[in-house]
Length: 84
Length: 246
Image 1 (tube, rainbow over the protein chains, first blue to last red):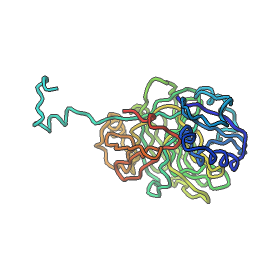
Image 2: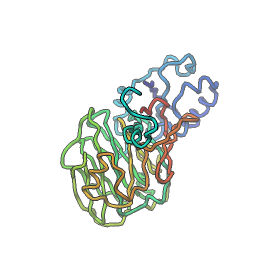
Image 3: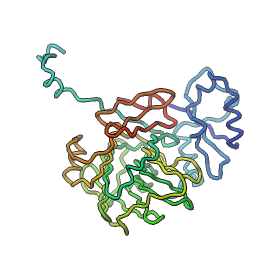
Image 4: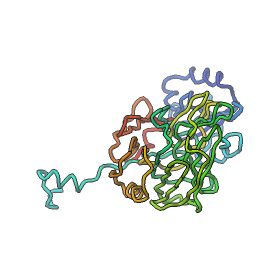
């Protein structure tokens, strides 16, 4: 099972944060920066991580994480979905 | 086991007794998909798409397969989208002259424990949707010519659709998927039933992902999802090694 985090940020800031991680910390993340899920307009994003690790990046510590079931409820609002 | 009387010298007999692995991918409905990319060879006006899919939740949109799709208004809507909607009916959206026309099933298919074999064929302006080898919906669209033109990028994907305007994927599948096939013909009713029963006899198959002949590999953090017919291989997005099980 994965953990999911919601961040309110910009893509450039997210890239800076992720680029500052160590290789071990990067291995905790499942998502690639190019495939991060954003809402529209792009202000919030979902970061997916592995469930357990000794290498949790500092910027994730203390941040609320969601289970798959919980994140799907959060994402069910219209701004996260396409209309067609 | 030797005790069952089979001989390893009787390769033909052994071969007929053994079945090839039937693997599947589990997708989370959040951000996972298999991206096949832009494949011009799939831009057909006559086709059949088939897949085996189990939903992880009812009452939500679940994309099964999107073919050469671009879903951003203003960038030239294009392609074909095969999916469940939140009413648990299965629909095909076909782009005709920069707008989508929809045909759906009559009944709902809401089970989260049953793997459905789903298929859709387009022949001229006629659309037929099958569930478990039986006709589940029919309809007509206004033109036989599918609109595959866009000013943006388009993609073929398993388990999601592509939106050029936001440069992102959406309508993710929450569930499992395997044995996705693309035919360049409109299969007969009998042939769809054959495919449902795992037959590879019907002709016209131009792509098969996650089927019996799959040789997928994991590397660099992603699965290479092999198209065993034409090598239009897909790449998993945001998935882990454990998301493929056999």
